Image: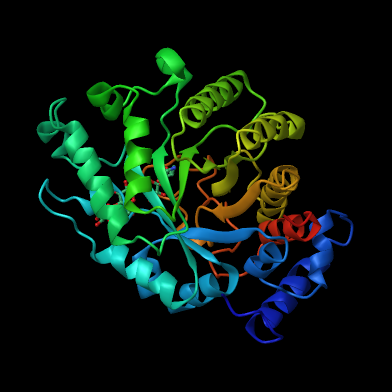
Length: 377
Ligand code: G3I
């Protein structure tokens, strides 16, 4: 487990944070601002004392090549999920080869540092290698899928807290029965590809929790309400047919000042999921600030408010057992690059708890306060 912060590095960071923000924030009253003077217990500890796991996505390059980042990751996080290293496009350079090096390094790193490890992801319509569409047919698809899952899951059996077995299989806009997303797997195997994936993963590692992971389930919009209904229908189908599934992963890629957020709508959905006997993990949380002003102070406040309103709402549901941010520091957010939308003012987005200098932002305070005020699980 990550070291509990003393008055050393983190104490100094908190003092810097206090000085730089103290004057500007005197006239504000958000609940996380009290943290300016509170002890600087890291997120992993604040979450753990309420029975919640906190961690983040990262990659082997950042952990290997950036010791200052790695040190902050170990201080703040209790779970590691690889951003890329377990996806087909990285793992399977050709039909006969598994490139396990980077993923092995991350699993060994997690075990060596007492971190839980999340596997992401076994079946997805995206990040498929170039050879996939040339090689995989209706005749060999099941064999290739089963072999991939069996090979990968068995390799790490016993070291994985949970697997995102199937990722983003629902998209009502595709107008397919059950609100399923059109995907190569659906085209090749029909909707049973989902059951095949879960049964194969359960056989390969009976101890790992098996998760269905989805995004855009958060806001009170018609599209996201339709998606919540379709996800619930899928989960009901899986649970009622005895498929080994243990949790819903809510990615929670949030957007400040973009859509209407209704905590009661979200909580009702989460309770419906929990009533199926499933846990809920917030798996990829971050907050886009594209619609917030250029001023860093205003932007950080708006991002923090978004974290606060979402997390304090979801943590009222006792089956929410894990919260991961999709990255820990703005320095490595996926939202900078990969062709993702750039802010209209051209300034880099600031979606995560730590800034580019690895210092705590208001977002960190909002997440910390949400853990502090949550009921124990
Ligand atoms: O590693 C190669 C590098 O060798 C090469 O030079 C470079 C050329 O572009 O590509 C690098 O791989 C990139 C990889 O991230 C590692 O940085 C891929 O092109 C890029 O497509 C990949 O993007 C990832 C994306 O999923 C697609 O796999 C993002 O980092 C990652 O944050 C994002 O994460 C997804 C979740 O898995 C599912 N939920 C949504 C989330 C955000 O899209």
